[in-house]
Length: 370
Image (cartoon, rainbow, N blue to C red; front, side, top):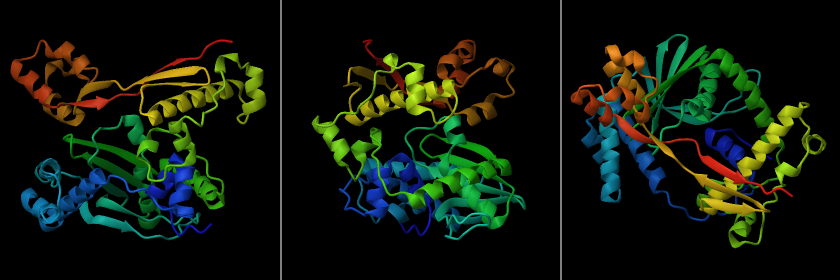
């Protein structure tokens, strides 16, 4: 199978669902038209931010130049302008390092010690010093990921890896600018982390080159996928069932016989149970319902949220206050313990910094005993 280059999007599709990857990049089946409203808005906002940065334009002019020529709903136009204004007023001139380029292009090429050709665009690339590159990633997402999710962010790792190979930098700083949430989050990626990622990338690249048997991964994204496979359509029509064994009736011996690829009994049991749980979660999400039953097992899924405060703004605003040492979390629930003793003006500032953030999915699983 010919694969001219590897991009973040190709890699992400392969990891998410090999069936979709096969349809999109190998067999190249015709896609069902899907709603691109959110993607189009993100593209327009990115272009306006880059235009404002390159030509030192104000937000209104930059957004009007990009979006004014395109038909879009009034609310979408206003949402985009708010995000561009936040970038221009609070982000553009406050980022570390010397600007190298907006929309920095990574051209496909083989890197030393690996034949992985990577292609992609970095929203904004800066140089902090001769050994440190600064990657800026503009985000128009409706939610902010957890710190753990950011630490494993595929786009930041693959772009940092490419810069390590192209520019020879030993360290990368990555900054995500969440334009909807007045939030700027950063992390450093060391050479040691990139070396670990290189091993994983080589293995994944090898698997992609040999790959010839697509398997659908039924999950939440199936409802929005442009390549809806027979498996998903069968589940929605009630003609296909996901076979999930009753985990409470399987002994450790059964698990070892069936699934021992790790050579560790505890890991085998834990891994298998997690796989069963993940498939239940995926089935619930794919169905569009909060409850589903599969072969006697049932699952109910909820999506709780927490109201959190923008951490960087909170620290900058209040780190000098005597009560700051008592803060254990930027969750509003926790902050209320401190806020009740604060002046009304400070309470208002904290409330103005807050936004609703989705927390981990909560799943209650019932597996009947035989």
